[in-house]
Image 1 (cartoon, rainbow, N blue to C red):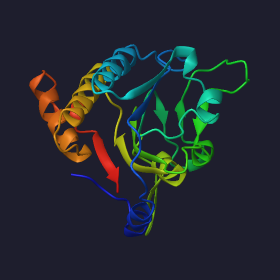
Image 2 (cartoon, rainbow, N blue to C red):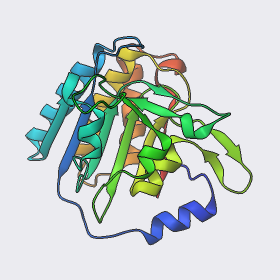
Image 3 (cartoon, rainbow, N blue to C red):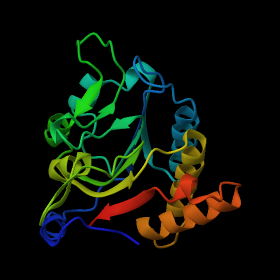
Length: 228
């Protein structure tokens, strides 16, 4: 199952289809944050996904700790990637959507604050073809203010505007370790499929996460696929 916020946005995404992207993935996990809880399981998450992709001859670009900084993300590191994966904290501001953001490493030499706000996501350079999928492995990344006729106005809309075709996002605060398990299962299901399909891979990942001891829907049901 997958979703679209509006018929207008769905049509725009279909019209943006371009040439097939090379097998490249960018994995971003700051792990430690100044004003937010440390996410230890995200490091294992991106390491396992990196190994899975490398075993299938993907080009892996992994940014962790201080490497996962705002200035690098803005400098063009996201260009020409098939998949973008952010394992971090997210914060949605429904009253002031432009203040919604995802957390990156802070205190870099460039002086950036480590908060990638909605307006900054709009202006990310993903290359001419954009990205096929962006996974926002964080809390409530699929939420935002509702606009009649347009759907949710939040981080998701900003990534679509920047050029992403599909988004894997969450609808509530998620469990760190369970999310790492499900994300690993998602990529494994996708990479091992004869006919790779993100919606099918997500369905299979949820089944496998339940089988691995995380049966309550709280652990796995938050994540949905949105887009073309």
